[in-house]
Picture 1 (cartoon, rainbow, N blue to C red):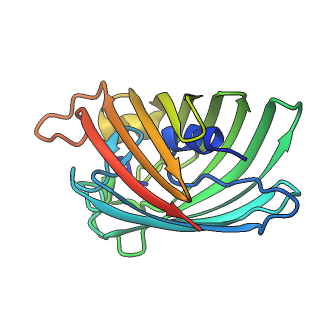
Picture 2: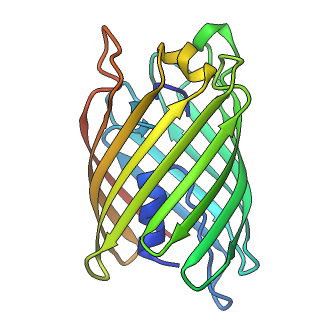
Length: 239
């Protein structure tokens, strides 16, 4: 994602934060391979639109056996002021493990790829490697992500986020997210560090999920609306 850029509760916690790759720990008797495809009215990454405030397609798959190790890939159509390549491909892997019945830890590595990128910040290579460490306790999740070279800037980036998902029933979940994007790379890209916010609701049924959310940041990007508040809708199907 460029700068312009288990259970229902666990999936929503991940969706309210990074939203791109949400590995699932499956039961011993379940097939450890899952896939997903979706449509979104505006793909935002850390509060900033990746699709020029327009719609996009997304999809991916995960291999997550009961051991806790997982790998996966996820792709999305992108078109923004940082990358006109048209495609984002994320490849990731990591390990999830239970410390207690309610506390789950997650550590992993994520590679962002832009195969056709031809217009990146500071004329750098937008492909980015990011390491992350997260913890989920009941309905709450916290996660820290670090990259030594932030999306074409050549400088480091840090992202700290907190997510909350409150299940109202087996079908409906309310969620909230707040994140802080910082580091020299972020300042080079945006001129400042910033916070992003998201609040939304998800309905899930028979493998389908529908999310309605409001996304915003405290960025002031003069001359464009990539980081302004927006209402987004996403429909997806898991297999």
